[in-house]
Length: 485
Ligand code: PLP
Image (cartoon, rainbow, N blue to C red; front, side, top):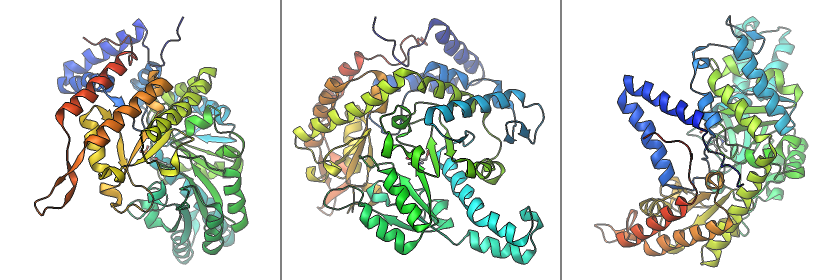
């Protein structure tokens, strides 16, 4: 018998979804309609957004209940609110699964998102390495006991630390010290990039920058780098310059959990502190998490009240369910298929003459440079969307079109792999993408120059590709068993 798809709903789960919608409809029908429409839209789209996935019915159903009503500031067994015994269970079980899944000393499952997890981690490191020594020097236990002068000095010190992270155009994330994000306002930041010839991280150049800049925190991890990272080397560099190594594995946590990334590629084995989202390749609810070595645990656990308010107990419960799912043997198979599919997609694009940053992939994503087609990333993204293919535009290294128009399109396989598509389908998808990119052309502006936003695409091409995409998806039902009609 063929294995049940991860998104398959039992009759009981279907009744639960239907009943929930009926209840919502009676209060605000527009919201019930939007929820119903969303499953139709998701079923109909060829979702290649590298940061999205499909959570199981068990994960989705775990979030819709009264756990949401509870305030539970603090940590399990040490709350600032009464009546938290069930939230204690939820948080303890989620952390227990997370530690076992990733082989971590400590897991903090409260962050509401990846950005919160990163903020928690930054402040945990500042607390450990800047605040605690200042309290010791002043011979006090708490910041409230510092003199006004010592407090002013500590605030100055906290606001004057250095961070080294991957540059945005080579795949880093805004939260790794860039000015539009609070991390860029908090830290004096410098970036490392990739070798222009290969597109790969240049560890020697990174080491030289680290030696000169001497960051407090070295951040590894990315949103749009199609290759693996040698975290052992990253740790050596961090140790050499006295930095704390923080890895943001938001994108590839599923590949770590699924044991595709092991040894030198396992961030948990090498970093002092690791952050992640739980909803991307890890396939859980929307949320964040911090994993760390024992010596950072007490600092990480102060995420609330440092940068978080009360935790979301219903989401922590769904994290526990998702982690339990990821501990099953099938998840390893899933993670391997995500990578196999990305490679097949890359090969299919390359065979058709596509240009890929780094020339390929060995993780879950492919970054296509569309400038050879005369398009910006924005035009390519929109033309693909017109044709039923959902991707997102992304900068390529040294991008002349900046972060808004860009010259690239990021394509990821976690979602379609959950849906059951395999390497044969990936080659077909590469063909569809290639057809659209070849057919689309930039529109001409009133000044007679090529537009960076508008484009021309023969509707017959868009319709033809959309039909072929729909045919492809028809063989892989999403949330089979969910019938809201
Ligand atoms: N870190 C990385 C590497 C990401 O790619 C993202 C989101 O795309 C985040 C952090 C932020 O996650 P969230 O959207 O859950 O705040």
